[in-house]
Amino acid sequence: MRLRKRKRCFPSCSSLRKVDEDEIYWRHRKEDEELEWTPNSTHLISQLTQCFRLCCEECLFCILFSDIANEINDHFQNAIEEIISDVKFSMSKYTMTNNTATNAMVGSRSWIGGLFHRTSTKRNNDKFVDYPLSPVEEERLQRLQERVQVPYDDTRPEHQEALRALWVCSFPNVSLEGLISDQWKDMGWQGPNPSTDFRGCGFISLENLLFFARKYPASFHRLLLKKEGIRATWEYPFAVAGINISYMLIQMLDLDSEKPRCLPGANFVKLLGENEEAFDILYCISFEMMDAQWLAMHASYMDFNDVLNATRIQLERELSLEDINRIQDLPAFNLL
Image 1 (cartoon, rainbow, N blue to C red):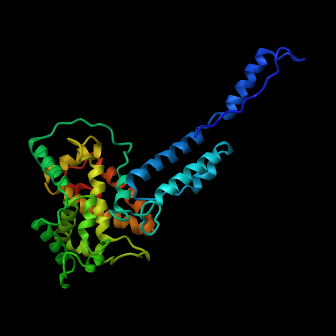
Image 2 (cartoon, rainbow, N blue to C red):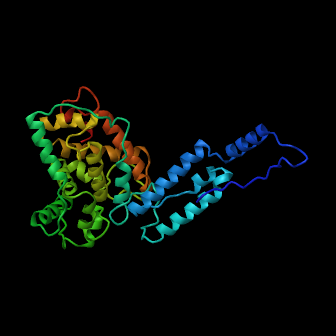
Image 3 (cartoon, rainbow, N blue to C red):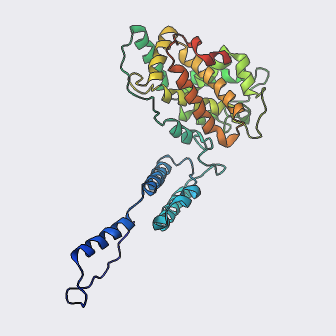
């Protein structure tokens, strides 16, 4: 959309009053200043453009524009209304679950993907850090990165067995009817088939949950069954929250790079060199930390993104401490 400047007629030399050239210049200058975008408008327009692009690319979460639109100056109110209309039209093509907003958890069908996009945002401490790797660190980092790349495949027997094992660890006294069953909803999966939720993060997210259940069963069941604290009416779904935590850690530690380039990631590699289970243990710590944040913030379903972001910030701080040489040295390790 293009804003056009209305043409102004200036008296010619043949008119009774001759217009001075300087006066014409300053009239033009004033008109240009009136049409100039304010810095705040430019920032808000940029935000809306970015949000529209993300909606078209991700197609997984809706955006509330009402607060932003109220801040736009009068010159661009009509333009913003047209952009909002276009976004609403584009979003109407896609099926949304529960009409959730930006602060809701979003998944492969309803809330994993949108949250993944938000938690992948770069932070201030994501500066390039160059450091050498010991042979042990390099080998273990490579193995971890290979795990990250493995997708969940419901046709592979080992993946099926891992999923069954997770059920047995979670509900040892309840027989599982099948890999596709409404029973899975009791664990916090979105539907009767958990394999659809793994698409957002792959097999490692199942491995993380299974490790948590086997290594720290008391903590696992306390969080699974929401045994402690004053709980919200709409609690976070346990299993899918676990997938989001796995993805958050992968992004925070920069595991998609050849080697982590941020300070928390670089320090984590040292912990990995000391203990090959460092990532899985960090996952358990993160889950405990997230639940503690949830209770401290008196959070409900729509607040999960804020809770996870607060958890990530705290983890980054602890992983940036200078005296952390083992995974057990993290202050939050005591939560387990």
